[in-house]
Amino acid sequence: MADLYDLNAPKKATNLSLNSDLLEKARSLKVNLSATLEQALSNKLKFVEAEKWKRENKAAVEAYNEFVAENGSLSDEYRDF
Image 1: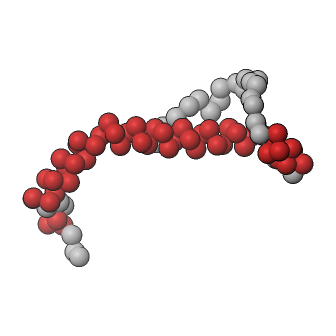
Image 2 (image 1 turned 30 degrees about the vertical axis):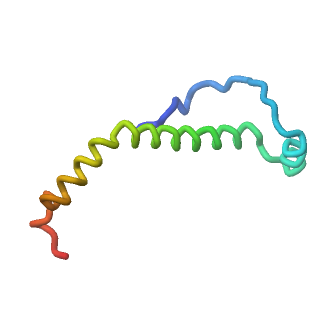
Image 3 (image 1 turned 180 degrees about the vertical axis):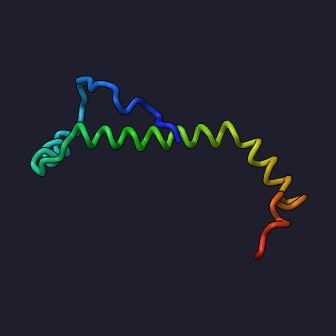
């Protein structure tokens, strides 16, 4: 699967507003905020893109499932189970 964003793009400074207690506790545990946020955003992007794909392809998936329910799978003749 292709990457959802350019993994080699340069870093860019940004300002965020966070819960002060959450920030204090993360810093006290030496959590890398940039890496953590980057990973969280990457995971969110994957989820949002997957949901978008499901919405955009819902009719095709339903049509395929209906076809299989009526006609069986195209590979049924080759299955051993």
